[in-house]
Image (cartoon, rainbow, N blue to C red; front, side, top):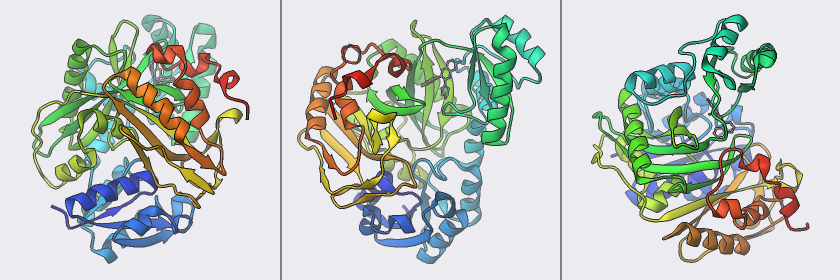
Amino acid sequence: MFNKILIANRGEIALRIIRTCKEMGIKTVAVYSEADRDSLPVKFADEAVCIGPAASVDSYLNMKSILSAVEITNSDAIHPGYGFLSENAEFAELCRLYDVKFIGPTPEQIRSMGDKISAKVTMLKAGVPCVPGTEGLLTDVKEGMKLAKEIGYPVILKATAGGGGKGMRIVWNDDEFENQWDTARREAKAAFTNDGIYMEKYIEEPRHIEIQVAGDQFGKACHLSERDCSIQRRHQKLVEESPSPFMTPELREKMGAAAIKACQAINYEGVGTIEFLVDKYRNFYFMEMNTRIQVEHTVTEEVIDFDLIKEQIKIAAGHPISGKNYFPEMHAIECRINAEDPYNDFRPSPGHIYHFHSPKGHGVRVDTHVYAGYTIPPFYDSMIAKLICRARTRDEAIKKMERALDEFVIEGIKTTVPFHQRLMRNQDFKDGNFNTGFLNTWNYKDELPKE
Ligand code: MV4
């Protein structure tokens, strides 16, 4: 087992990793930017090293700085958390070169899922269902229009270097094609310096259901059931839950088997997530694989009673997994509490928190790095807490979430708490009647309480 792990991240996930390391008897090193000097990970880790100025590119994305911190602290592994360098194949390669274990998949595995069209080809070969579409990159408009006719409108143009919704364009008919094609290319080039585009049939009003997986260094893989992440706004998840209200035992069996196939196709090492689109007929299609721990891993932890960070560390240390699958025994819902103003288009609202009271009680979990007197810096992600409620049934979990949200007191900044309070009382949400289009159709603004 590792002696000392350096955590190349900040905020709640850094704290989350420190907690598990402590329970495992592993020493921890926090790295921090000048803006995070007064943060809880810095206080709670055994050692802390400043790695640069506030801007992420100069600190949490600065590979040389982080590897210097590894050197001076004599750490034997790096946990990258989510975001930042967690899916950076070059960084995983550098870790290998400097003989420090990157807790996660190999650079080759990261790379194989980073390019979306090659990921899709790999999945098709492995027998994982994918959305009908082109099997390679599109070369020109004419070819694109011809293939769109064959696939049948509506179609969606996607950037092969994309993911998470960037560089996507929906095309409804021939007349729109050229315009959308040009826009997709331009966006992809600007965002990824790679204008490779492919095309798929556009699945209307899909649910976003993802399967948590784990694979060990010996080629064994298992699944840990699903999370429903359909409640999103501009590709930012706001609420996640497990089990999905749309799931059936048969569908879980099929999606779980497909997710394991996906994992084994690349000999995946670590914990990961296979994202699927699910249509109203319960057809499911591979979308992307996330080769990192995700924000919403906590939802799975609550329903199967399992520490996913501990599992990551054990896998990285060369422990074999049992190979059995895990099924939800409870219902859990997570609300992301962001320093954003739901009354003003979710505009970021960083600043000083002068009063902070966190909900508590049976079945309530709050993962946060925030405390009374803390100042949210404006340089990073706006998520300040994850509120997870667990109960035997979905109805009870929603009731508990309503109660817990009502207990939350965060004074000094705007947060997404009022949004979640309304959502928990929305009849369609309560009925499990929602898909990825939910927040386009629900006029939550009119339902928010007066400021
Ligand atoms: C799609 C789709 C419909 N049809 N692909 C959005 C994020 C990126 N990972 C892929 N995405 C989508 N791909 C086909 N063929 C609809 C989306 C999509 C979406 C997916 C999941 C969650 C929210 C979404 C919001 C808009 C569009």
